[in-house]
Image (cartoon, rainbow, N blue to C red; front, side, top):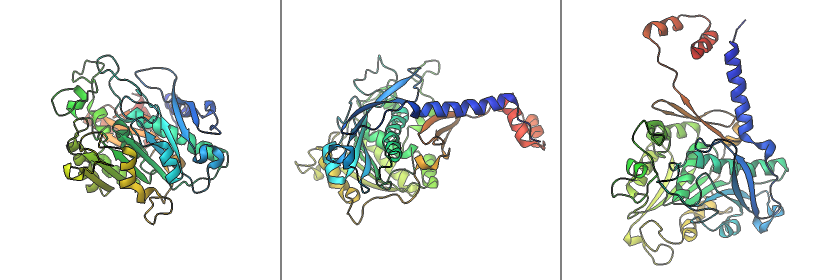
Length: 389
């Protein structure tokens, strides 16, 4: 008989309880019957211990739930750094009407005005993407609960600037869910100059510190998970089955989100075999209508999305982007795991709703202890005894 220590049983029970409570589904409101905003519980944020809610914006075809049909897809459209609602993102009215999708916005963690000197360090895509995925799941699960048919193969995400970063990150944290991602001038990595507000390459300052004794210290693990184009993580996305069409539109003179970071990301994602379509905008691409400059704003982000992504988003297009596999929400597993220097970031879908966590590496043992553990014939007992020491 296999004996598992009581402490290990408590650990397993506690983990399952946390995942259940984190989903918050027992406290979620119903889907609104027409266009509107709702509050749903979000995963606890370390900088704000305790319960936390996020505002979810839902925009339906024809303005109401009855307008959702079997061919209707789902689309996240996410605001910029410092914004709320759909600010700095493609117009939800246009997206709903042209692409037959329910458009979902979210006031993810640290939405609204940000002060690097006073506010906690800017999240830069981890909890923000988890909030966005939770909002998407709220609509996805709500439709399924009501028996409302929709097109599970047409799930998209877009956003401008900070919303572009979150669009890229939701694809990373849910690599089996999205058919198409449209990144409009988004941040590609939490580079040192952005993290610490130094140098002249960018005007962004995420408010982190390099001092390990500071509560604002940016650990190598937290910096790595926020690098969309991390080669090891891109390989993991490919192994997990990511097939999303990733469209990157970025100005070569962007003074907020450096173009070289986006170019590095594109190269790394392509080297991993992911489907990336880059559009780096130079002066020769400015047309004065859709594209007005090659800096950060670029122009009308709604028209820019239409210009570069229309063929992948139109339902009747022969090149329409669709997924042909089970989404992360339906997979109900812990397969999404990104290794970092001191552990791994895991996004658990065991409860359907995403729950993110960091698992540190176990303590290093002596060679003699490792040898003794390796010679045991009760591997499960030994593992839990080892873990509890």
